[in-house]
Image (tube, rainbow, N blue to C red; front, side):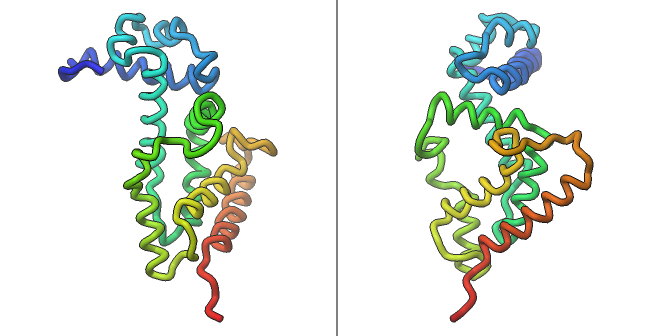
Length: 198
């Protein structure tokens, strides 16, 4: 990243590089992505790419972090209704399958085990705080907030581009999506419901 603010032209070039890199990395992964294709698609050059991002790894980091921010911003968590959050995640995977593929490439090529992002990036995760607060209010079952979040996300990905059973697409009939959303909503509600008093 440059130390000084980007000019409007520089910001536009950087944006084109990120968009081209998002498509390239989502399609080919980190190892398979080619800088030549990225700069050609972005109507840029290698000097600009390296000036903005340092190297291919730095470019992937920027793309990946931006994809995570997009999911958080476009699909903010509502811990009082985790079932609705799961459905909204399902819909976002339909709109932007490339984002879920980026996370999968990160898992395959960088972090085969453990957390997908560094511990430092998770220490103050607002999603986990929201789940813990919903637990304190008796709206969500007891348990590790991270494990609950992981379960809800995994359920939302049941028909995502990385499913080993069936990958949904936005070209399917609306009724198929309505049916899946209803099943997902009911299933998540069952999983996260607080235990009945004994």
